[in-house]
Image (cartoon, rainbow, N blue to C red):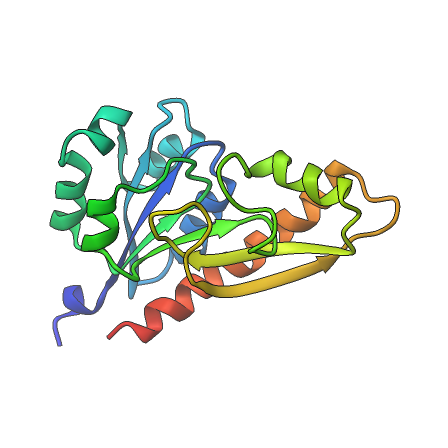
Amino acid sequence: MNSSNSTKKIVIFASGQGSNAKNIIRYFQDRNDVKISHVLSNNIRANVLKMAHEHEINSLHFDREALYHSNEILHILKDTNPDLIVLAGFLWIMPQEIIAEFENKIINLHPALLPKYGGKGMYGNYVHQAVLENKEKESGITIHYVNEKYDEGKTIAQFSTSIETNESMETLKKKIQQLEHENFPKVIDELLSKKS
């Protein structure tokens, strides 16, 4: 069996600091069976582009035009033919053409227990704030497939944490980030192992 054919490829999309993207890169960096082939970002100042460069991963900054009004990103993805496209803190909705081309191959991480606290504008601290304001007893993360609507794709896995009575935004954020860093790479690994 040709080793290059058995190597699973991941493309990561990220918008911000990229702590999850960095964590995924670190998780797979010494593996021969999995390769992060590209890191794509709509934020030219995203830290993750620098990290990708340091790890000799193809990195690309793109704008709204390239994603929504041309087939540039779609062509890059088709040429790469990834086994999985991972949205790690990527805040734009995926175009229909990309979703159709890579059905059940695009996954996202959401910092709440969907279907609660999902949808447009619900990301990062906005989610944690809403969870705390509604005096929820627990929160967590949802890893799900991506469809044409924000946070409505089929759930792959959920991990939860309890919320203390004196929970602050900062402490909740830390708990959620811990769940993300602990579980997101493992779920990606499991999904890839199921793809023959």
